[in-house]
Image (cartoon, rainbow, N blue to C red; front, side, top):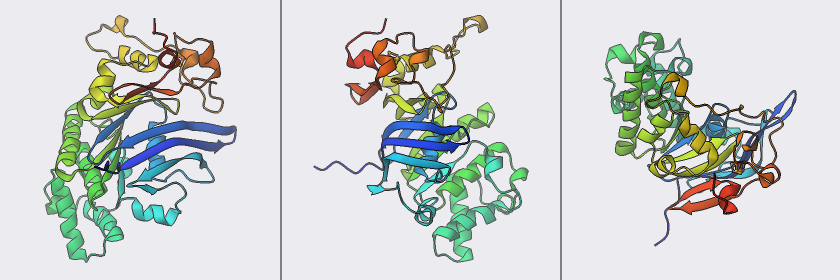
Length: 329
Ligand code: SF4
């Protein structure tokens, strides 16, 4: 029996930004796969490349400011790297959709919710105004909002934060995109609304079969929502696997350090931090990018980039401790 094509395959993706100070090596060989209907969490500190990975998949980082010197992004078996902006514009919204952290900043303040969602529908589907309105109502209902005049005719500032994020999700899914990239979709919301939005993502996956990449710095959100996680550090995936496996049995020193920083049940003076800070990617560390902060670093870590090692059941990590058979102290 042939294996079904993954919805998304990112392989050895490198991405550089051109800046006044030189080349910023933002992604250094990112490899990910996502099956249809699966939720993959991208986790890590701010600046580790999670959002940049999402924007690269959408083709929003383009020359001359950004370039992909190496690597591949295949969506449903089709190579996206190198596609023209016009082709990517047809894919965005229809095949791959994205929701951002701040729904108020994502929505246009001078158009009503109906106008904004129906514009997306009419851009991708040849439908009449009446049919577009029906599609908007259906999209709003799929995210748990009543398609009443009060909602359809509202401007973003007239809705609550949770309602605005639901509208963004309705817009993202209004054309039936099978892949959703959700970039910190609950971070700007208060804690009860956060839980509602995360439940909604799970419901959308269950009912619509949408595959999702969930970008989050919150390990708790990833643990509750994702089937698999990929832990990123300085533009590299350092560990990936089934969520429960990675969080219960982390093998990479960075994942262990992140986990030790969780506040669970600790007093303020017991809270842990990871010494040092995320490196400047204008001049990234040689070898393993984590070596300046890693308490287990040895000579090889400074000189050689670690290969990915399979530690079982699809759980992988890139660390010389694993590939050289040394156990972490
Ligand atoms: Fe630490 Fe070396 Fe492993 Fe990098 S490769 S995480 S520096 S032990």
